[in-house]
Image (tube, rainbow, N blue to C red; front, side, top):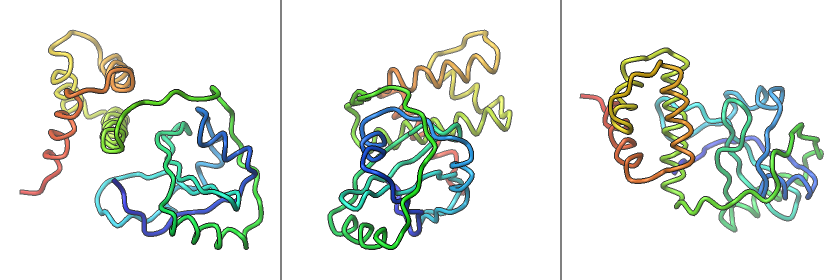
Length: 186
């Protein structure tokens, strides 16, 4: 669970709120560029958070995006927080967020919020390791899930990502604990 100190609010039409709540969407890179470095979390450490709040003056949804612009997580706010955001959004101009609907009525994952957080954290970790070419650590994590297989680095990364979103289970919960332990200071 993340505790946010500061986050951007965008006032959007109701149809956009419906898409952000119930569809799989992809926002354009220009929009993501507006989000970089604008969210302040209470948690310190490495965490690139690309998220914002969307409001239509009736409801509010918090959305977190991947670096590619795909929605990773979405959540409603507590009632008192939602009322505060709606009051703040009354002074904002309505904006058009450039996005594309990938599929309507996205299916429910049936994961708890903690499991969704763990899955998204591991996704960010795998992506970070892949982008920074940390071959040893990614191979270690791969072997924890699949055992030793002779495939190239890119294939290992892609298999981890695919399996993470298709078959999130106790293996990934254990892997999450391992990753968290790897960042503890001695």
